[in-house]
Amino acid sequence: MALKQKGSGAAAAADPSKRRRVGFAGIDAGTEANECMQVFIARNPDDVGSEDCTSIEPFDLNHFFGEDGKIYGYTDLKINVWISAISLHAYAEISFKEISDGGKGITDLKPVLQNIFGENLVEKDEFLETFSKECHYISEVMKNGTSIKHDASNEDDLAVEIVRVELQGAAAFLYSRLISLVLLLVEGSTPIDITEDGWEMLLTVKKAAPESSASKFQLLGFAAVHHFYHYPESTRLRISQILVLPPYQGEGHGRRLLESINSIAESENIYDVTIEDPSDYLQYVRSSIDCLRLLTFEPIKPALGDMVLSLEETNLSKRTRSLVMVPPADLAEMVRLKLKINKKQFLRCWEILIYQHLDSEDRKCIDNFRACIYDRTKGELLGGASGTNGKRLLQMATSYDEDSSFAVYWTKEGADADDQTVEQQPEDIKVQEQQLNELVDNQMEEIVEVAKNVRSRGKDKLAA
Image (cartoon, rainbow, N blue to C red):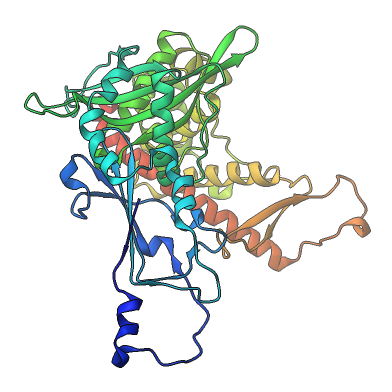
């Protein structure tokens, strides 16, 4: 970690014409970390010190710097961090014009950076040496792994492969170096406990060009998965973390990782596959993949056709009860057995596939579909369309979203009116209805986006 002071207060003091006048300075307002800190990926020694190399965009750097996310005591502060694409070590360069206590103290940057990058943070000379000394680092990790074969699409780079390794030894050490990238790029992430049994990693790697004198393999991304017991004698597979390194995002590597995990689950007869707190984009990719798999699953087609026909022929605007858009229970179990898609994920994909088979120009049909989503959402939140079972929505401002956040609360069934702490007024019902419709609109948008992606990627399967 290097410190550079852009100007010298001592030089100004030596020149009487440049001496500052005595006055009362204002309280230091601080600088947000997001405004003064940048992180780059260095693929070779020439990238170190340059801002022209690949930069990454952490979801939020402020939360590493105290409650208010600000750095105090520096003027014109700039923090540049380079992470080696070869060894994942990090080097930080800090520059500023001057440093002084403006009433809020002086932020000690070193422990904060060490908290983010851990032992990966090294001095410049050591950082530069890692490009040559550790050029075979990824290859060493791969030695104890097994390559996962998959059906490559026309979009796939044949030089890329997925390697499966147990999360111990060299692989565990690699994961410890990847933690800083996970913390920077995945909101709400925490390191996994690799001391537990059942952890393994899938590494996406690419063979380097023959003329390259550096690393034989490049690490493009990884997934950490956990095998855990499911009663009475099976195993479930949970995807805990999945990350594609920024220079390689948008190239289909996340899709290939998910497809490889599905392949493992099917070949080893895993009970099902789940994902721990997926981001919106990861859920979008996952649902697209699973919908494409379901399109070629013959047992689903009769029930799907019947559901589409019901939506086309029914007028739900005059309904006295909701049309339940749920697949047969035996079909959900069959999907789990054959494709290892868990029930919750299958229900999500079921709605997407129904929408995909509807005529988007048929207003009545789409309105019927939305009515089903509305009834399902209301039932999940309030206990059904015909009664709320004491549940109610209460608008509640939060730091996440002051305008559209709410809480669900309920009262004891059969309680006296005098015992109710909140009476639902007409304006409350209006707000509740508005919030429900906003939720449904968001779900409709998600369904439409996945359906579009599935349609564009699976035209042959839709036609079959």
